[in-house]
Length: 324
Image 1 (cartoon, one colour):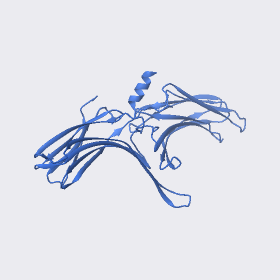
Image 2 (cartoon, rainbow, N blue to C red; image 1 turned 135 degrees about the horizontal axis):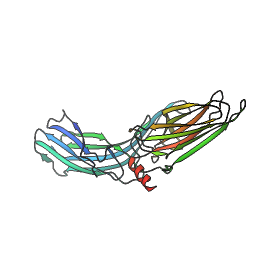
Image 3 (cartoon, rainbow, N blue to C red; image 1 turned 180 degrees about the vertical axis):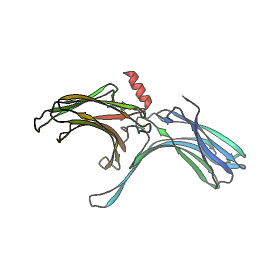
Image 4 (cartoon, rainbow, N blue to C red; image 1 turned 135 degrees about the vertical axis):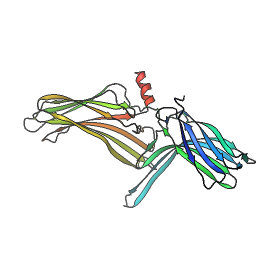
């Protein structure tokens, strides 16, 4: 269902095609984020502006999704080798002009051809992604073929957000805790308890983290958090892979005096451009992790709590929350 009529339009002025003044592709947004998901239909049009009568063999539009990974590393002999792999996720075509025996003659002026391409209902379509060693790319392509000219192709990407929810996604309050004994002078114990409303969020949301610190030691302690993203890229087999680790956000709290308790609250705002968690793709997988740690001053003890976070499509979040 269309939420508004805003149209994304892209044009190609082709100097090598003197009869074609304009070759453009446009498609309609179906939501405020400008994204598409499983089963959605991409509705749009291909427009031609011709300076003279033009013979056309075919005009078609195509939607497709592809996964590509590539990186360079040293093998066991010390030689540089390139690892790469490609996977076609889906391809849908629609012919707007198709002739088998003779060309179609289009008159001078403007011509508009509507198309409707439905994204398939597949459980293994991963969300759009672009990283250091690979990408998941979805695009539309318009292709104009004439007998005596080279085919003209125009491509434009679109953003795909899968509505498939990871199995470990939880939509109710989460609590995790840990503690550590202090073995230095006068000893004692430090404990940290972390609370979240859930472990699954959408891009643009705020992750409200509450940490309760109990310090029964004779040392000053301090809590801090780190939000990270780990992406694993695979190539020709599951045993050939590389990873990319990135720290997204960090923060720290106040000092906690000996024999006291204290709570810290950290609102972590996820960017609207935050990539969705990749859990259903053979070649690229990703995992967000929230770590809350206690630093014990003048001591090496550093108890940590790790909470895996999942970033999913807003529609999936609304659906799952309503089910609970």
